[in-house]
Image (cartoon, rainbow, N blue to C red; front, side, top):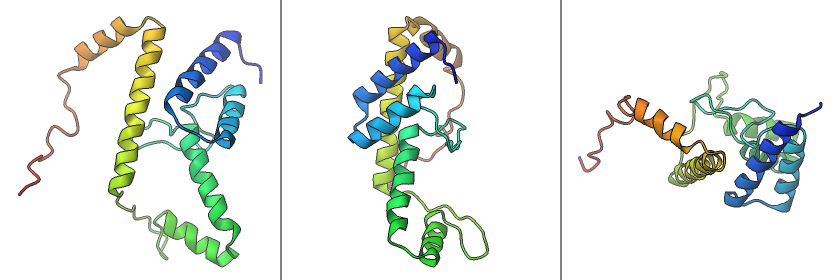
Length: 157
């Protein structure tokens, strides 16, 4: 697949910014570079995995999860592996998916990832002289209702 020069430059810039704020192993870095060299964004993945909001899960997050699963399955029989996958993805014997509630550490990691992603987006906007457009967008949408506005923050009850 031929990638035009402008897109290749944008993907490389995005990769550099992502690498500045995302710790990774050399193996992960190599896989990420191959992914980007093939014309993909660091914020896309080949599994089509996305968050509830519809935003794609970053390539590296999907890569890490797949590697973890591969390592776990290496030492298991077929039956053990099947059971592990069903439990890992919250599927009971009837085929019903029941999501596991996230742990504090998982929520903390998601919050950190969100912060890094926001920082990356802002850096990208600044590098491309798009800050004023971003501010204008925020000003236009500032009065929209946020999902957590109605949340009862009085946890001490």
